[in-house]
Each structure stands twice: as C-alpha cells, then as structure tokens.
Image 1 (cartoon, rainbow, N blue to C red):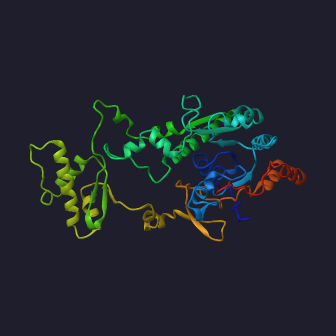
Image 2 (tube, rainbow, N blue to C red):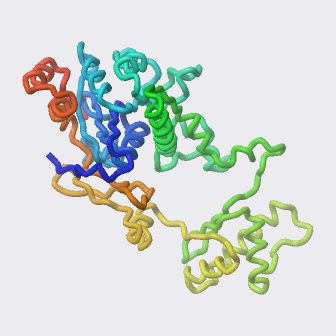
Image 3 (cartoon, helix red, strand yellow):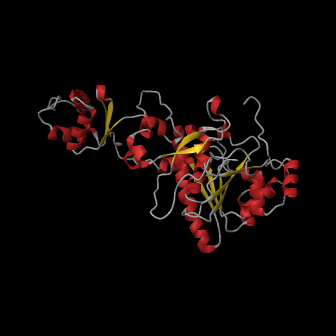
Amino acid sequence: MAERIQDFATGPLSGVRVLDLSRVLAGPYAGRLLCDLGAEVIKLEPPEGDESRQIAPRHDRGQSWLFTYSNVGKRSISLDLGKPGASDVVLALARVCDAAIENFRPGVLDRLGVGWERLHAANPALVLLSINGFGSDSSFRERRAYAPIVHAATGLLRDRGQLGHAPTQPRNAYSDVTTALHGAVALLAALRQAEATGVGQRVEVPMFDATLASHSETGNLFLDPPDERVMNPIYDAGAHGFIAVAGAAPHVWMSLAAAFPDELPDPAGPDADFETKARARHAAIAAWMTREPTQAGVLEKLGRAKLACAPVVTPREALESPLATERALLTAVDDRRGGTRPVVRSPARFSASRNEIRGSAPLPGEHGGEVLRELLGWDDARIAALAESGILVTELRTKKGV
C-alpha cells in the first residue's frame, strides 16, 4: 500500500469528509480540489474501476495520468452497486460524510437506490453536488455529455476557430475542469449553509451552463452588430517563434507606432478599408519583430510600449520553465508502478494553512476494508461477508478487450 500523508489537520477543510461517487473527470477533479485543501475524500469505484483509469495510451492504462490527476490523495472503495444491499453500504457511508459528489446522468442515482431523497433521509445535513451535462430539468437531460460534446454544444469549438475552417477540439477537457471549479465553489457555499442550519441541500452544476457562464465575452456577442474585433493577436516572429500580445489589434498597432514611429511607419494608405489596414499592420508588426536580434529584445520593446506579451510555448515547456520551477508547481507522486509522476499542485496559496497534494492516487478498491472499519466500525466478519456476496470488490474486474 502506498504511503499516504495523514496530516490533513493543517488544511482549511480539515474535518470535512466527502464521499466521491463520481467518475472520469468533472466530479473527481472537484473532489481532488477539496482533498488538496484538507478534506478526507472517499472515492467509490465500480468493480472495473473508474473509466478514467483506461483513458490513456495502452502502456498507461489502469493507473493512467488522467486518473492520477483527478484522484491524488483519495482513498478508494469499490462496490458493485448492481448487487442487492450495495445501496445500504453507500447510505451508511453518507451518514458519516459532510458532502457527496456525483456526475451521473439525471435519474441514474435513483435507479441505483442512492438518489438525493434517500441520501437526504440518511443524513439531513449532507450536501450533494450533482454534475451533469445539460441540467436535470432540461429537454436534454438524457443526453450523454463529455467535454468534447459540451465544447461543441456551447460554441467553444467555433469560437476557437475561424469561420470557413474546420473546428478542432482543444487538447484539454476544458468543460470538465471549468465545471469542477464551479462545482467546488458551490459545494463549499452549501457546506457553509449546512453548518449554520443543520440542513443540507442538493446543488446541481450542468456542464453546459458552467461552460457558457465562464465565457468572458458573452456580452459582446449580443451587440448589434456583434463585436468582431480582432482580439489578442499572435505574431509570427520568425526565428523568435510566435509572440502573443494582449489587446485589440488596433490598440496594439497604435501603441507600437507611437513608441517606435521610425521603425513602424503605417503600411496602409489613408483610404484603405479596415480589413486591408488590419492585414497590412499585422504583417508589419510581425516583420518588425523578426528584425530584432533576439526574442528577449522583442519582448523588451513590447514592454516599453506598455503591452503585455509572452512567447507562445507548449504546456510542457511552461511546466519545465524557470518560472514553474520557482513556483514549485510540480509535485512528484508515487505512480503505484515503482516510479513517480509529476502532478501540478493546486494554485491557491494560504498564509496559515496548506493546500497541496496529499498522497498518491489509489489503486481500485484499495482501502475498502480500511474505510468500513475506520468510518463505520464494521468488523472483519461483516466486511468478509460483503466481499463474499460480491458487493465489496477487492479485485479489479477488467472489461473484456481492455
């Protein structure tokens, strides 16, 4: 069994216990954030393990990077919720928890016998965070939702590309992670109210809503006509790579032309239309950048023009940069295969408490007996009977073909 860091007492969520019924990413990542903050998080997995264990290149399946990323520091218990009596174990765990997280399609928890009504009856103070795709009261409630689907349904894919070009999926699960962040905030707010009133509640955060709520330019979409400014241009600076600059393209041009009038004469005639001016000025700035001897020189001049800027790098380059090292962003965790793998720490830094990765990601059902003994006080005979019945799973049941 991998060593776990037991000192949760210095985390701001010390004393909070969360039952994580969720799978893959949006729900589990919300639970991981709470765990980093000091909450004790018990992850419930199906007999074959969380699906995210298999979402990986073949060599990484079983204890994948995605699973590690969203489940570090948790304990795992594996239950077959299709077995009679399994729901009683879940309800018993809910009685000793402050919150639960689930991200099934609406109605699935009810069919499994652990829906909100039963959870609330078992523990009236419990807060339940429900994450789903499109809302339990919507006409889309039965639709399956994963981040790539929500990216398409919310306009995120079209917003990333240009009309006339095929949209492409981002290389990260933006909607999952964004929803997890909204969900964690909402759960903490509901916990505060439950502590004040003694009564918990169900909080629903649909991925569709969360993704659109996080679109910072929503107001500009409803202008008449919509705002079509070229925002935050990126310039091909040749040997210096691509350089991103913050601000509308006309603002960038005016700032540079004012700071370096001899180096950047206006390439567009006074009678040129807007599109012609925009193209000519963009090309002139890119050519001006390439004439600088060094990338550092380009960035220094942009700074003198009071423009925020940065070279375009890959995520790996960012994580291996001097700044990331200075910030101590990467934490090495046990990969449960005899090595370690890096995980990015949660970003919030507290002056008087800890927000950090609390240990490795669990193996499937690794802590089942331990959790039932510690939290429920069940003896070895009762736990053995659960295992014999198939409710408590102690060996991973792999799906055929995996």
